Image (cartoon, rainbow, N blue to C red; front, top):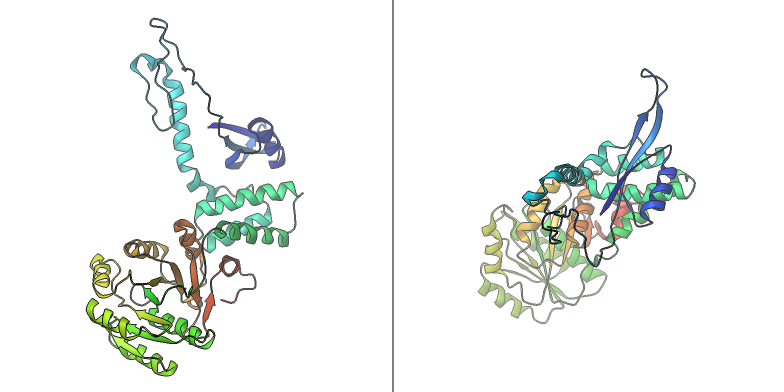
Amino acid sequence: MKVKKYVAESMPEAMKKIRSELGNDAVILNSRVIQTGGFLGFFKKQNIEVLAAADSKPEKEQKPMIKNKQSNQKDIAKFTLEGQKLPVNESHNDHILKELNDLKKLVGTMGREQNQNTAHLPAPLLRVHNLLHEQEIDQQIIFSIEQNLLEKWYASGESAEPTVEKWLESEMNEKLTNIPFGGISFQKKYVNVIGPTGVGKTTTLAKMAAECVMTHQKSVAFITADTYRIGAVEQLKTYAEILNVPLEVCYSLEEFNIAAEKFSQYDLVFIDTAGRNFRNKKYVEDLKRTIDFEHDMETFLVLSLTSKQRDMEEIYTQFSNIHIDRLVFTKADETSSYGAMFNLIYKHQKGAAYITNGQDVPDDLIYATPEAITKTIIGVDSNV
């Protein structure tokens, strides 16, 4: 990788230099406003300092950096950022080694520093930065979006804020484009919801079932394995009575198989699982002993948007031993920060099925799409 620092009077001028020397595929690693020149601290000039990089084309045969005059050998160790080690007889190149070590540290910490370097951003892009930061979007994602928007901004001749907002929406949608989204596929007979306690699994399951009955005219049945939470069975029994669907309670894998056979004539069987402490790995193993996850099943992991992202990550990791088809995000009406939803989907490349924004069954259920999630975060025509 070829890395070079540029100083220019403006970002367009800096980008012109970068393209000229590094090509159109160059990446901006960092940019900041600096003060240069002046006399006795006065009359300083404001410039833009940009650190850019471009992949070097691999050579067919790499030439040694140093030639041993005594042996005239050409098998000197190759020098890379990953393995910065020189033979003893090349110790006189410590200066080069130090520079590359410094570069490695710079690249490694660049992402963490981006949030502090916003002075160079035009006002509309600074508002974008602040919005994404307030929504707790991951800093690496913010940096990636900002670089693309900054290039569009200067290439277009400094567009107005509504245009920048459309660019932002497009950039965020683009990052989720290749991730599979969608609700119940109707390709599997069994629909299972899993997740920790308190995220609203039972209510979410009832909303999904009601939507299938009322909109798609499907015959459905309930199986519950949530025998730990007080009132859990009664809650689902109430929903079953409202929807006029049968319900079976299971305490073991054998009872689950019996209930599954009993409901073999129904279009869909919805399965409610116990919600317990997600930090206990034994919980997931208990689920496997109660439910046959290999049995023609579509599984949705339910996460609450009122949770911390760190907790969501832990929950996802704990349940990753079970095949998760898509995610469901609940309690959108109880928070004003939705960035964790975007971060989790993008990081794990796992699409979402639904977003819930209230307790009403079946009304407070929204189909999750990249567009719906983006609009929820940036506040454009959002239904959440």
